[in-house]
Image (spheres, rainbow, N blue to C red):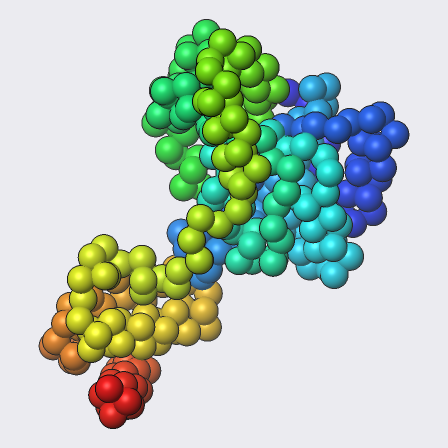
Length: 293
């Protein structure tokens, strides 16, 4: 599969001008991201595009190094060109959090597929609608956990990334044909959901609020979790390692329930000062809340 790499603002500017010149109003699009697997934090790494004729691999990491590159990404992702995607919610969330971009004009084939009763993944949808058999999930899982911040990217990872946009035009056409036979009410529901598919359904929660059963914790436990999480994240940020490499989140939950850290962390734990400070800050915050109440 041949493709063009876009890694500078000048190259992205030329690509967007070529879309305009060739009257390309729709592209297939997907992202590859890093989310606390190999380094600290969330990062938009690549954007894959297909315009029915040509494949493009946009090096989003490189483009984010300049204000011009970030502005061009914003112009494109918020612009009038329709972007066909599959399940855009996590992709939309990462560009909101990392770049402050609110994607617009997204056509999410999963919205139509779900309305038609399909709840599987992209590979399954390709097999269902286009009759192209799956090659299995083992390699897909492998590349989902691959290091997308590496440069240069291995050819196998690039192939995987581009494969995810290869069939999106055909899927859109197939699903639209299928939708035509449905009721006006279902069609109206799909159109309504499509308009907001890239918008957040809820506020973007901080990591400590994503803990399982967070809502069932006491106020005191919630305060301790917040401050212990913040301490762990600050350490991970300084070291540029995944936060889990500093301390497993299950231990933080245990620490929050006990209101202390000493009896929970491993003996060789290095960051005692940071967590002792977090404990004191949490205790102070709890006192403030109690006085207010």
